[in-house]
Image (cartoon, rainbow, N blue to C red; front, side, top):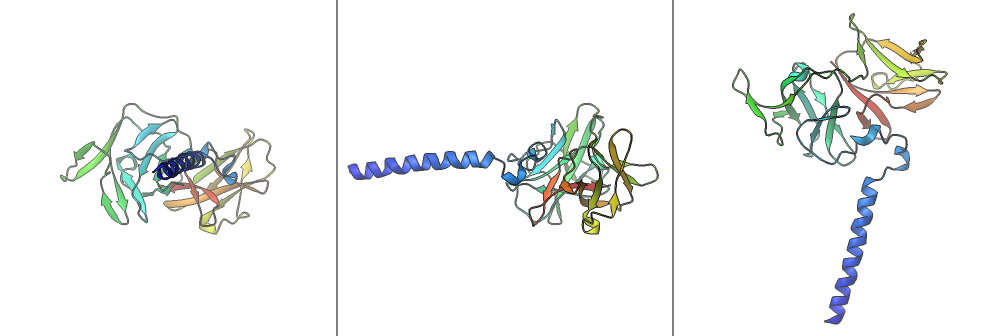
Length: 238
């Protein structure tokens, strides 16, 4: 009997330290992620819930494990679907960083092609066609979000990157195989590098090439990782 108690005690100690070690490792950044801690805070999201206001925008999360999870709603006039990013711990997320007016905004997720309501949202309403929709509310107008790209009146898009010390900055886009020579950015007197392009609506992955070094967009918290574990900024052009 003593031996069994002793063995059980030893196993409990190992289990305790094993769980503690996992918890510490779970929250640490790998070496390749050093320098991305601020931008990766949503890529490392672990909690799932209805849309919520955070310091950087409106955070959407979805926790079920599916192939493709997309989002649409009144906040983008139902004009297109936004693919969510699958983060490090399996949570799908998207941070909406555009200005938005106060009001009630119905929305839905499209999961592997099937439209569903948010399973964690308690706010529900019916539209003019008597269809039930999830919704979130914004209490006051939000104008302070500033992210790429800027939409111009002529239909073009301007991407910007602020760096006063860089000698050369290029813009790389997945549409052209991340060709680092296709888009050269121009530096203004305000130390902001800019490039104006024409893109069709849809999702895109991009990077800035700063003096030969690949960087993600410091204004964009939507970070996706490729199959080769390369990090790209992610944006959906409306």
